Image 1: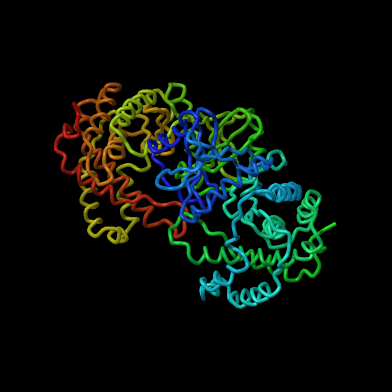
Image 2: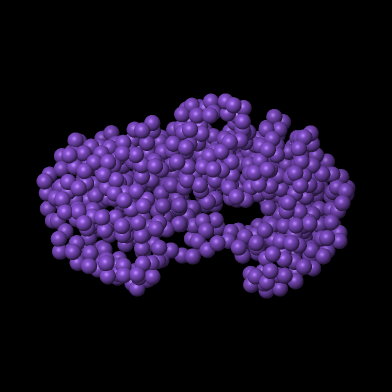
Length: 320
Length: 320
């Protein structure tokens, strides 16, 4: 849950007057998007999402994120589109923070993931990857292979207080990943954080993809591996092959996976497990006492990592 | 900010199917109402507020709260009204908690209070008191005079860690209040928590009153004293007589204050300051580390109390 910037009513009214969306009727902080302050903004012209970018988003990246959302929406990907003000600008300031207004997407994040959710997701992710191919800007993944060891080091000895032996486990795994990480897989625009919280469904159909603030250029199959970890494991750590089968096969129907991508899936999934384990450990160790952000439990990713370490053939993921 | 119960999509759909409001289109946790989980629920028939009652609300009080809201709305008070399901029930269960659906009120809580907000508030509070007169149920104020000393005792020595000498100050003040608290003032339905967070405005006009979960039967002038403290002091602790003048005089235009009520205002304001100082101290001392609820700073109420202790004539509040 986000820390909210308190937007004063007069500042909000002046801000909204820059757009052609009528007067403000209500504005409520919503529990969506961990990195930013988000508000459900109702005006005379309908419902919108107002986003204030907080410290964790680099303002220099915003033109990439907003440009990407516009590009994807033009290509029929169900993502929020940014509104332009009367002066043509999509990005302005509110409460001394960069701020933008987006279209409102209907739908709800699924709480109990069903295999058909994963099928819908696979297709949408493939469409996103295809639509991203002719987007003109690029952004390096700032949470990729090269960033993991510095992250491990910065967490320090605290990691073993979270779980004994974890530093050793992660060091050995990083040695392996750094030596064996693939080099020449098909790359392009990745969402890179497509957890269930960031996907909306309506009547069983995928209706929206949100929170593109980790989007970057990376291996497309790595994005798929992130989804495999985020959607296909149960809370008790067990792998659900029905979900994985739907995710992977529905992805492949829309965008074919090359042989090299299939073979790389286990290592990409291990890398993705390490990435989320490390950032969650970092947040767990560094979150200020009394902060309103509840850090996510890092430990579930140890079990996910351990599952992938034992996979010798990508067929074990349920590929048909 | 509230702690949210995570409502699963299937449980929500089954719940909403009990009402005649169409299918769910979206449901977002909102940062409103400290005691309960609140969601902005969009269905095919429009926008609603879904409330799940968490531990701090006594389920036995819910028929009073819901009945009161219906009564007030029937009497043109701009408060949420509860929706009845097809079976006639307004109260049912969701995620093992009592839950209800309410009409959505437009408007925004003011962040920078202006004197005209206080004028609007005074009139609305008087109308609420008048409308409450023929409500058939009653509920004792569980945070009134008799409850303050037990609250002080339960906070214990921790209070002096918040501010040195505070136990002594509060003990002396309670001695005074217990000896001098008025006995026969006009009483009736009080909101008892009408802070700016709980009042909406649209284009400078009051458009909504929310969060009636402290509503009770008590002295009407005590409810006004709560508003005086909540709306007419600046962040630096200084009293804003222009705001108080608007609040009190606009209240009196709609519901006349008797001489005994006017004379009692200083002691009622002292009592109200002690009530919020004590509950905030309690929350400050007892909130669990890492909780998502950010406790409110108790100390501002020491300055408010100290202001009222020096008032010898209610004319000092700006009464005309």
